[in-house]
Amino acid sequence: KRDDALSSNEWRTHFDQSVKHESLIGERFKAVRPVLVSVGSKLQKTVERISAKESHVNKDFEHLGTDFHDKQKGLDTVQERYNALSQSVAELTGELTEKTESVEAVKRQMQERNDKITDTSPLSKVSSALTSLRKEITAMELRIG
Image 1: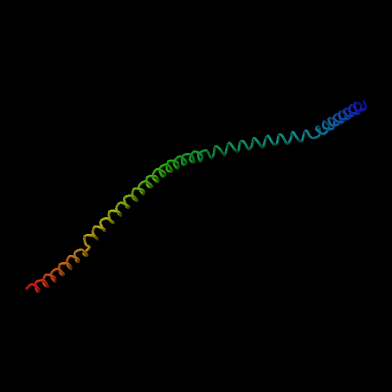
Image 2 (image 1 turned 30 degrees about the vertical axis):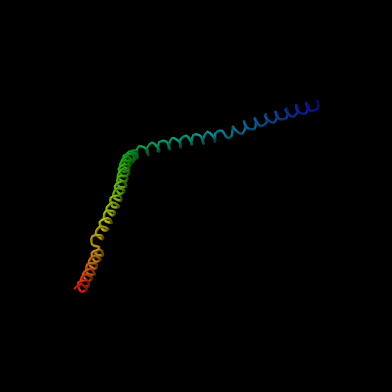
């Protein structure tokens, strides 16, 4: 029972404090209300001025926004063309590399054939063989004859 009496007393104390706080807030609000109304009206005027300035700035610079969008579209077009041409250059560079390698291979083959054709070592071997054969024939004729 004692706890019930204590908690009922506590509740009453809180209620009394709430009433005091309400009356204190009411008194102070009466003093502060004109200041708040003044600040509110100043803020409203300021917001209206800012809105008017923003509207004015938007109107004055609207043509710049339009120009920017037009130039952005032009840039996008140029960028697309650049990308297409870059891709084409890459493909053509690949083809050029392939053709260059093919030409180099043909040059190597031609050089090898040319080296074989102009190689005089077999001819000089034949010539030296003929010379030694002539010497042998001459030596045999001397023996025979």
